[in-house]
Structure formats: structure tokens, C-alpha cells
Amino acid sequence: MSVLVTGSTGFIAQHVISQLLDEKFSVIATARSEAKATHLKSLFGNPSSLTMVVVPDMIKPDAFYGVFEKYGPSIKYVMHVASPFFTESDDYKRDLLTPAVEGTKNILDAVKKFGAETVEHVVVTSSVAAMFDFTRDADPSYIYNEDSWNPDEMEQALIDGGHAYNASKKFAEKLAWKFVEDNKDSVKFKLTTVNPCYVFGPQQFDENFRPVLNTSCELIHQLTHAGANATVDNEFVGNFIDVRDVAKAHVAAIQNPGLSGKRLLMISSRFNAQDIYDVMNEDFPELQGKIPKGHPGTGALHHWEGAVADNTRTKKLLGFPFNPLRKTIDDTVAQIIRCEKK
Ligand code: NDP
Image (cartoon, rainbow, N blue to C red; front, side, top):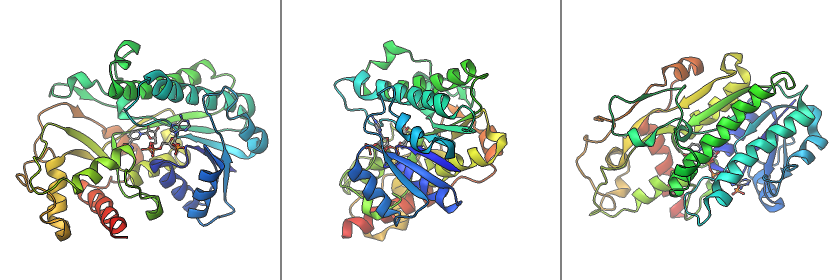
């Protein structure tokens, strides 16, 4: 029995695939081109348990039909990870909203058409962006949790790239839950969504290191090159989760029936640039003189007066501790330094 994983070439999906292979699942993974598919398979060491398939354009209604026609009966689980994650675009509908929403619709339609009786579980990689009301970030009375939804509709989605990305995740996730409700008598599968905040951590393979990393890790990458006299930006405060914990949640979702029908709010802790510089300054002597010191110990990890994330339910359901900021930043930065030396 196999797990179909979309968006296999991405930062998170590669960790998901790695953990699935470690757990002895067979994986069928989609990539947008033959070259990307061949390259990724070779990075994994060409295992027979990993089958690559090319899905060039997931917004075509029949995009995933070929995968199910060929491998359908063996596909027991589906993990839909693929979605555009960037904010620079001159056409938010074309580049962000449509692929997120249509990609989700098309994979679920394919499951219904070909795997109504055989697919047992679908995991959709959603986001905190689907849950969070961004207008209330500074409001300490705002507590959000696994039941929360980003209130934005299409009007707000088109304000800028950030709004468009956030809304793309909300619209796609809403569609998935509605699909399950509308089709509860015709499909067998249960749905779990994994909703991470900023995902940091090392790339699965050093070979994937690029001058510009995936959107979330690029944030750390840029801090390593800030310069000793850079101003520490205390305005930007976010939440983070380690990519290995995000992957673990995907795998747990198909192993643990208690996660069916759940939204998993994946947050380890708050952070801002000061917190990240503190770890870099303490743990990486080679960065001395290249990054600012700021005011150590004063970051958002130590003090935060805004919105509160309550993911008690998620932590209890998953039952494993999330990596703390220090471990995640250590591993992310160690890889950046290692790869840039080469
Ligand atoms: P990456 O950009 O590294 O990976 C995105 C993946 O989706 C790639 O495989 C990419 O393919 C594929 N993809 C993007 N656009 C399309 C499209 N139009 N059609 C088909 N495939 C597409 O991002 P992440 O790994 O960080 O993100 C993976 C998922 O996790 C996304 O759903 C994202 O929204 C979600 N997420 C990520 C967070 C983070 O901080 N990283 C936080 C919360 C959620 P290709 O390689 O060919 O471009």
C-alpha cells in the first residue's frame, strides 16, 4: 500500500517522504517535470519504494487522473503538500489562489473518482495562515486555536501578495473540509490538515542548497548575511515549527486514527530576529563580526504581549515534543555555513 505525496520537490515534502520511507511506506511522489523527478529520486538513492510521477500542471481538472489510473488500487493514503509559497506576483489569482484551490480540488476529485473505496486517509498541508486573523496580531486578548479561521475573503486576498498567500491556504483548506462534508456518503477517506507556522530547519539534502532558499528558510539565510552593524528588526514577530516535526505530524496523521478529522496547529514557539541572532551568536563563533548582537535575551521568545496561540489539543494529540528554537536554528544555520563553504 502506497502514500501519494504531491509537491515532492519542496522543502517540507522531502522531509515527509524521507520519514515515510523510514517508516517502510511505499511512496508515489509527484513532481512538475521529468528532470526534477529524476533528480529527487537520485537524492534519495533511487530506492524501489519511491516511485516518481510527473504531474506538470495541477490546475488541470484531470491533472491527477493518470496517477490514479496507473497506481490507483495501491494508493491508500494521499498527502497533498504542493502549493505555491511566495508573495511576489503580478497576478495573485493566477499564481497563488488558483493553484492552491484548484490543486486541492483536483486531487480530491481524483480520489473520489478513482479511490472512493481504497483511499483511507487524505492529509492536506494547510497553514496557520488559514487559521489566523492577521489584523489581531498585537491583541493580547486574541487567542486562536484549532477551531480558528482567517476571516479574509476574496476582497482582502487581492490586497497584496501576503494576503493572497494567506487566503490561498484558507480557501484551499475550506474547500477540503467542505468536500469531505459534501461527499461523506461517497468517499471512504478521513481528512487531517497540518497547519504549520513558519517552518524552519535544514533542507533534507545539502545538494538542495541554493543561493535563495525556500520562502521560510530564506528568512534565516538572510539573517546569517545581515552584517555586524545591521539593525535588529524587533517589529517582525512570528511563530516557528521545525520541518522535522511538521513531517512527523503528516506521518502520524495516517498512523493514528485519533488524528482523523483534526486540524493540527503546528507551533513550537514565538521568535523574532533577536532570538535568532542570540542562538547564532552563542553557537556559531564563525558568524562573529558578521551578524549583529542587538540586545541578547530581549526577543519575543522571552517577552510577547500580542495574540496567543493555543495548540494544547494538537500537542496532546501528537504526543511528541516539538523541537525548540535553538535546536532548529542550530541545524538550519549549520547547513547554511557548511554549504556556503563548499
Ligand atoms: P516549497 O516552495 O519548498 O515547496 C512547494 C512545493 O509545491 C514544490 O514542490 C513546488 O513545486 C510545488 N508547487 C508550487 N506551486 C505549484 C503549482 N502551481 N503547481 C504544482 N506544484 C506547485 O514550500 P514548502 O515546502 O515550504 O511548502 C509546502 C507546503 O507547506 C505548502 O502547501 C505551503 O503552503 C505549506 N506551508 C509552508 C510553510 C513554511 O513555512 N514553509 C508554513 C505553512 C504552510 P516546484 O518545486 O516544481 O516549484
